[in-house]
Length: 140
Image (cartoon, rainbow, N blue to C red; front, top):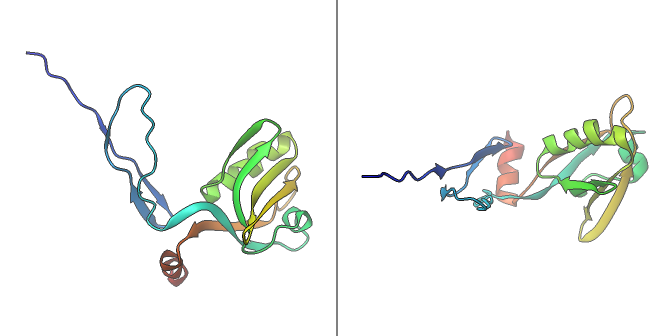
């Protein structure tokens, strides 16, 4: 008798102390697993603060802008976690000008930033959240 094993995968990730778990999926070649329940998190990063005289301020980024993706030439990616922005700042900006795409209110925006200098780009961000989750986040 041959036993067929099924491999099940559950992906858990933590963003801002909020855990989210994907539905278990049977692994097969070519299967793409997407995040199922985001527990009130939306794609993108909300700018919480900008340092005075920073590259971000010079580029025109403002508090409450939402950053959704980045590009440098033909290399690009999404911004889903504050760690993504840090990685882009440290790994991509030394290789050339980086464009951050996002929105201010409902208006699409593009901001261009250069290589990191002392102090970095000067952007503090948090994940974009529903109002319910945001109120919990702000309570600490």
